Amino acid sequence: MGKMSVNLCGIELDNPVIPASGTFGFGYEFAELYDINMLGTFSFKGTTKDPRFGNPTPRIAETPNGMINAVGLQNPGVEKVIYEELPKLKKCFNKPVMANESGFSVEDYVYTCEKVDKCEQVGWIEVNVSCPNVHGGGMSFGTSPEAAAEVTRAVKAVTTKPVIIKLSPNVTDIVAIAKACEEAGADGISLINTLLGMRIDLRTRKPVIANKMGGFSGPAIFPVAIRMVYQVAHAVNIPVIGMGGVSSAEDVIEMMLAGASAVEVGAANLVDPYACKNIIEDLPRVMEKYGIENLSDIIKGVK
Amino acid sequence: MKQSIFTIKENVALTSSVYRMLLEGDTSDITNPGQFVNLKLDGLFLRRPISVCDCEGNILTLIYKVVGKGTEQMSKMNIGEQLDVLTGLGNGYDTSLSGENPMLLGGGVGVPPMYMLCKKLVAEGQKPQVVLGFNKADEVFCEAEFKALGVNVTVTTVDGSYGVRGFVTDVMRNADYSYFYTCGPEPMLKAVYNTSKTEGQFSFEERMGCGFGACMGCSCKTITGYKRICKEGPVMKKEEILWEK
Image 1 (cartoon, helix red, strand yellow):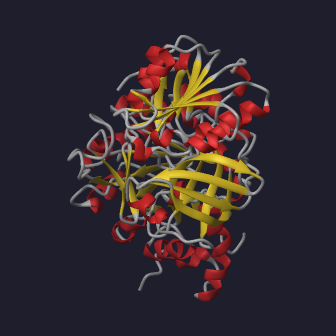
Image 2 (tube, rainbow over the protein chains, first blue to last red; image 1 turned 180 degrees about the horizontal axis):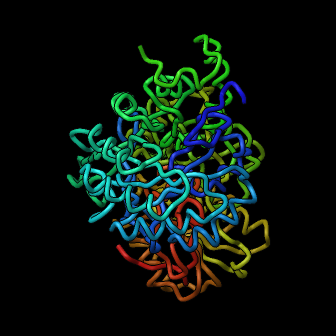
């Protein structure tokens, strides 16, 4: 066991760094640049029962120190992911991957999670109840404790692999939702998905994004993420994956001190395709600087 | 795709809002005209995608128009300053379909990628004819550079203050050509699509997140399925285009 290794729901990761869903595709674009086996794992592009094109463009807007996206879960559908993407991924990634699943009804979640649960390559199932960019699904399941628990229970009933529920920050009481998921059987919690945001073009006076609003991410949201990870990690007894604006080894350590057992990196990958590689390579230096022997020792280490 | 550091060798105004920047660095991943690069600028979160105008040895030429914060910042950069650049992005134009006498139509800031394309076609022994469209005389740039390649160049201006009055399609309508390549604002691309009598290739623009296929921010629908402008594009063949918006 290395100094950077952590345990995520019973599976050991060489290091806690995980590219977040939607910022890493199915890994190939990045595998052209570096050996992605150096990652802890990665969470693949959010998958739904049926193929989706997503929202009209423009889907992207810049913000101070961040961005807004309204992609809307574009993906080829769970069947193609299993029969086309995963076999392709096998050629460049030999670790268990995190399957990210989304839905528009409890039945959708059950359908996709049951399918990916049978894939040997899948280590964990990250259930996205927090996508702000789709109507009649996604985030609506993650904004009430009852609905989040219902999805959790239903998915747990048809799966064998660790189920991690990905929560939305666009709620009043995230702790209540996290606790409801834990009680319903979740093996872990990941947070935060994007904050709902908006920009307006001064020239046209129209929203920059065709869908008007979208998910705000990037370093600008890091303090909100730290706060919520801290709150949730101190309220539940299951592992928490922290994410939201992480872009350096220092950020990873701060996230772990707040309570994260592993850390997802999102928007940073889009600006610097080597972001995760650089963070992993920089971790030993930063660990030494702050007198950290083993990364797993600092989880929830905030005083 | 390659990430590397480039050094600014020149950054000059060609018109009141269009600039030419020469960058020195590792250009080995730029393999096709019509590809683009993605520049990281200080203080701005997202990179800025700019089409490649030319690439010769280790010198990359970009011609860009100041339209927002990023390009304004670029216009103020000095010789010797460095930029973090992703190169080799996008598919670029396929010259193998050109025939002997292809027509190249560039509109405004869609003109620059036509330059490297034209150079390649000439090197391959074809006889391209070039039509460059602008709004008015003081917006015209690059005419001499194209002429220096020894090709026939027609400039159009909407107000007739320079060259032929009208649009690039007014020239296209009465011309003979074996194939066409175009880049420009979307209304112009649509007009070219409707005027053209042969097959051809179009270069599209879209707001991008990453520029290398990871975020799905710039997807579009085509007759052959969903495509990412940054990865399977920005160049599309006429027969695959779906005009949706």
